[in-house]
Amino acid sequence: MSDRTPIIAGNWKMHRDHLEAIQLVQKLAYHLQADDYEGQEVVVCPPFVSLRSVQTLLQSDKLPIALGAQTCHAEDEGAFTGETSAPMLARLDVKYVIAGHSERRALFGETDDVVNAKLKAIQRHGMRPILCVGETLEEREAGRAVEVVVEQLRGSLAGVTLKDAADLVVAYEPVWAIGTGRTATSDDAQELCSAVRGELGELFGQAIAAGTRIQYGGSVKPGNIRELMGQPDVDGALVGGASLSSEDFALIVAHRR
Image (cartoon, rainbow, N blue to C red; front, side):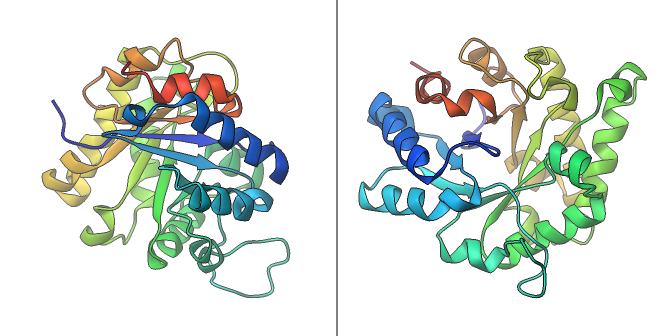
């Protein structure tokens, strides 16, 4: 049995204004019991415009939910219209920042080098990155899933120190399963999460690899969370659409009931 603390994170993507965000978190807290938080971390990642409102709610109601952001810029400040920097997020008590989500890679052209720079900025300002890696359907069907994921890991983690590697969370998210309703089987998830852990061992040593939390992401639902979490190398979930329903996300968080 692993002693890694599971982490369940909800990625809201471009959904919910600040008033809807407050309601969603309030309803989520209503559906959860104190025991549901024990022994695991729960994270919500709202859009930028909702971060301050959610932060205020979490603090005022003393909710045991961590605040996350969906991305950031690699530079601390500058003439980057429309961007948000890591120190800005840190001042809002953001604990986690997603780096290299497949939608950022595919839609906004983020390369491994860009993800690497963002990841280092996140860690430089005392936050923890959730580094996303995953293959497309074409890459999987060509038998290159492990190769692609390992290449993304190496590129995204280039130059990361052993100390910083110890604070890393990795999310394996097969691109073909994101928002499609298709989910990797628990065996698929285990195979790739095991490959991620193996590569982390090559890069940083077995102690760090054994302690790194690896999430599965890709159409996670209340109906498949238990089976996924039952795999030895799956330490949590990065939840997309289901995190926009307080009832569904609560069931995912409370999968041990």
